[in-house]
Image 1: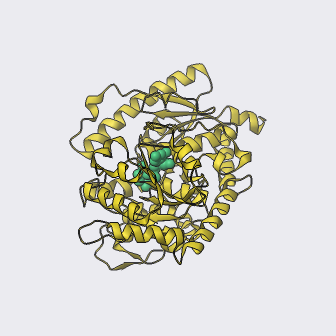
Image 2: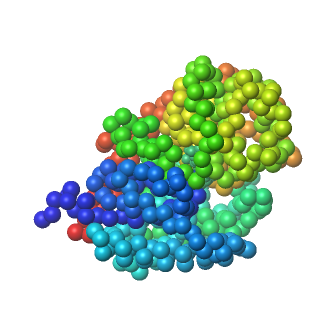
Image 3: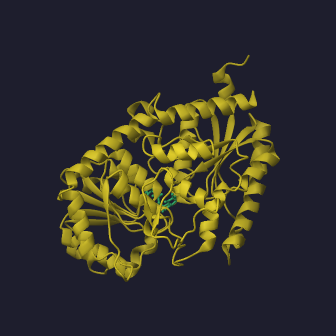
Length: 458
Ligand code: UDX
């Protein structure tokens, strides 16, 4: 009989993230954990730049340049998915053929859950399949209810009661917006369709951990078998023993213009900086950018604000001259590195699931300022369930005013609830580290997945 280690070394996984930063990051971290357990992993990305060509531990990255730009000049979401899925199908078979000739053949496709059609491709290739969810268990459960026809988003009910969750107001449910479009049914279909074939998939993996979402996880597990395998953030921030050769930027789609911000952070006192970032996709209105700038100035704390290049033209023109001592605006940074810096005392975030998990795992309290998608639900949990932050209020014009921003920052930095928010943040940090440490709940789930996927092919 083959030894488990040898069987693992012959087990080859293809990891297929959706090509957006918030989807690539957790898939890359999961790939690294599988490699650390002895598996071979090829991660497929459709972005080809100097950063995707960097070394990523022993994960093999197949960057596929998308020469067929025309395919993606789209008119509708349907067209986008049709073009994208046919490109994936074509490239996957090329990779499988290439890998089969050179080394061990592919045994499993781990694909992003928002691409449920990838299950058919796994079956055509004759390999096992795992659906990989990049959102929280609570958000997944909400979309499951939508899929089952038990809940509508948007809802006309004042308070929604769902198993394993606190009562949710409509503003706590995932938003049905898509970019500037306020109500986009196609977006909700896309998300609820994650469940369209979960009965047939071999594994469901979710980037969260049992302790963080125990009640809703128990309920979800009664509906479909799942494994919680997070938090999938670079392991060097979670455990010294888990050093897995993390390159600084991961598979980054963005690049900072300078690296001077680390020195700037070094020059600041402990817990004195508000770090502000809204992920890789959010696009704020110009008026909102003005209020953020004014709110930061009014609060009078140091701030480090990530404004992606595509958003820079919305910044108030004189901002940097007035705030150069106190504030620094940058186009991108290695976010976990910044959150782990001792001078950072608060994270003003859009509550993307990765940003939320990174803050929780690094013990940084939050000002939650959600925009769309799952962020509204994440913000509810940050403020009212895990109690690691405060959530901003939006005014009638849909803006978070400068006064509100100032008040929320002050509350987290030094207000009445500040010490309890910090205590809770420390607690979740410890629990996150325990979950991924050897023998922790997520580590055991990854071990089980490895054992099962290995066993499947021997
Ligand atoms: C989106 C959704 O918003 C999110 O809720 C969903 O679950 C996944 O896809 P995004 O909006 O980009 O992603 O936010 P987030 O999930 O927070 O992911 C952003 C990633 O970019 C994080 O891992 C963060 O560390 C990284 N980042 C952000 C940087 O490395 N540097 C930066 O300057 C800003």
